[in-house]
Length: 266
Image (cartoon, rainbow, N blue to C red; front, side, top):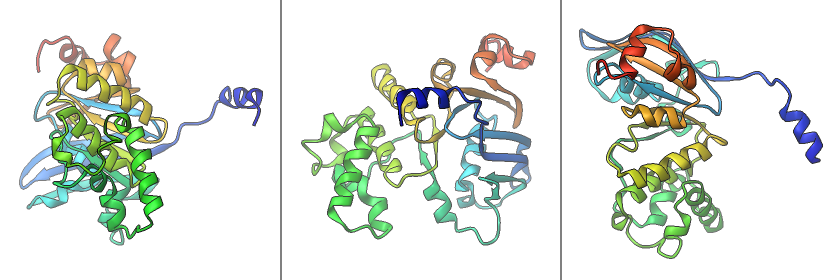
């Protein structure tokens, strides 16, 4: 394809595609309702940030998208969440397959007590991949995408537990993207990191948007303003407002949003 053809295609008004559709979604821990009537779309290849004070339901919603909350006893939900137009709660759905399509990065990095190499290929080995060249290529590609290759390429067979905190979190991201999910969920991925490590993670997230859809929960509103395309503000289990990030931080439609981002509560 010529450069002129590419430029003309980029100028086309290509419709945005929803990869996740959340419809009238409520969530319950026993008799306690944590989420109320959430309606929210997630657009393919966007970064959307969930913000709000502690206990507002943003992590509960995040963990509902790949059904991690199923691991908790006495929970229930109403409404639905659709992945590419199909319910994630349909009876014939294989939850393990769902979690391969929707990877997750936790607040605290969780490397396995294995080598850097074996951390990356762990999911591929479980999926039955045995070809060494395929595994080698996956390791290199994933570490490059996670902005870690240059730092670890000479010690791939050393323990992952010897990495720094920021490197460990990037390793966990590399491990997640090695199995090529469609969506990456990030729950406060930088909360335990120093500003330099946080900056590296943020740069990497911006680059990953070209290949993945990313949903990030963050208490750091500056981080949300730096990296996200859209921002959703939650309060007491309700979605108060969702808009382009620039609008949320410069001209929110709801006073409650303005009060939160200006530090009047939270």
